[in-house]
Length: 405
Image (cartoon, rainbow, N blue to C red; front, side, top):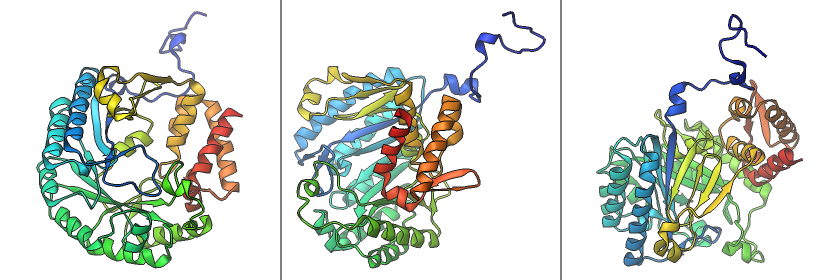
């Protein structure tokens, strides 16, 4: 077929099958986030199955940091022409690092990836985040400290093998809040063993008193291979319907305090955007994972690092050895699983990328989720209800079944 230049602005071979709205600038300026894994903890939470090492051996951690810096340098050339949207230092427990090690790590991040990183998020634990470590973190720009508190009720924390000194936790938070350069947020878990609605009244009082402006509210879940999972006979668990009820109650309290819901679990009072790594993932963008067990997502390919610490440290030249290339079906499932974690489903992005077939899948997904009372539709926007947030594992199974059927 000969293209009639009077009717077409592009040769026929280049007319896209689905609507496109990507500017040339976005094509040539790729954006990446960076995740840095610190796989060490002081002790293991009873509900957690994340592969971490319980230790505080500075020599082991120093060797690990040195290996990570070698890995960062390997990525530097690949990312040289890209925009770094954020760095997330997670784990594990990054605040288990010594003051000297935290400075060493942050200096390396800035030297290798540049000074203009919009945000560096540093995950922390109230037992290991000292005043001296906060002072070091406050010397850098665009730092967000996120603290896994989980509950303000000591009895709940003891049952899950967490630090339970609430007075010391308050002291640490007050010190952070004095640091004008540091952004701050906390994680709380709804439905911990023994939890009642009164727990969340107390949590709200602390949130107000301590001027906490960012809160992640997660439903309690027992991960496979965790202590709780292996010891199910210990009747410590809250009924799923009680968790849904408690989550509804707590979200209502948080909303009445002026927080707005940014993702399914993140609530904020900030005017500026924070937790950019999370938003980057949810938006379907690519990222680089650095450290033992970390994985990257690049060009529809998942690249996973060696999980075992000793192998990672001694065989760092083989980093990225496990590669899983996605086909179109697995890409669509991947994108949809991230999509549902946003405040509202980004239907347009998925439809533009995959065309009509994705629209049909989303229509079927919405139909099932509405029927199960997992989501609501308002002004053509779809969002998970509290029941869907609590039952997210089942929602993800439904997504896979719809695409694979």
